Length: 388
Image (cartoon, rainbow, N blue to C red; front, side, top):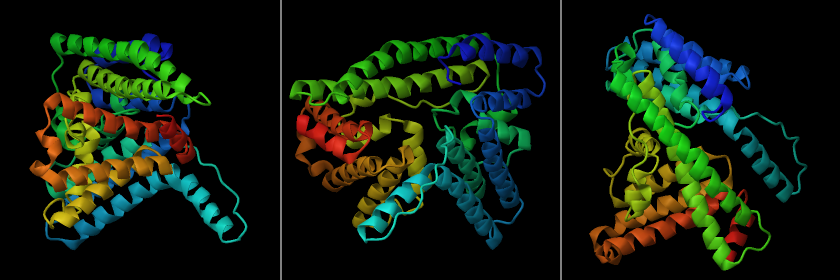
């Protein structure tokens, strides 16, 4: 079920809102049931997978919260919980990618290929795995209190407004809201307005830009002007698409009393790649920073290690977006640019250019990355780069 479908707009959302406000008790339970219906609409088996991930992290967080800080079992509980959660993500999202690459190596060295087993990718699995993991890590670090009940935690993991396309909601940002949140006319009406804005972005901007981009990317031999027009159209399509769903998610959250953090901040106004990642998909970039970059050592282990950490984080960020080598290269591209900007710092000639020139250069660098993001294979991306 998607936000722009008739079933969501005219049936699911009105009925859910009506029940939610008519029965003010056990609202988290009502939201949990509604979210499971929303997520399981196309494939009810996916709800079971989400429930397993929820159960793993709930018990992991509960065990960690009951052990003394210096107790070694806290660390081992966290490790097992993280490994179990990432194993679920790895199997469903990357098993087929692993099979294809293994077969490529087997054929290269003259062996017979193994049979391929297809695995259906559950929609939104990256979001709910990351969100449930954020709870366990936050409890371990002492950054968030343990959840008061399983239903509250399950509601947090499954919360349908941001379940499919984000933003990634971290437990420590809404822990208090799960216990108590205000419901006011002003908050509800601003949520409706924000949802309508996102709805407009998706249908009238993202979809129209997508048609223009598809026409160019699907062409056999686009000219140079067509290629640049096509990738620019795709740049705005993906921005309006992602930001539209984030706006709708924040708006829906407000209708149910939640306040989610902002996910986009005019990313194409960025004057460097570093600035771009402070503005683009903020919930993802801050998640990678706090749960991957900093644990790897951040910038505390010397300059070379800082550049390595930046590249590793963006490589994994690219792989998070999809199980394909083009996403890996997309992540490496951004990682190397971030490392370069960190290395040059204020000494870079780039920093001395007028602001509008820096914005233009950054936008062009981002356009090159969107070619990788849009093309299904490296061969397709290479052909499109040649056209550009």
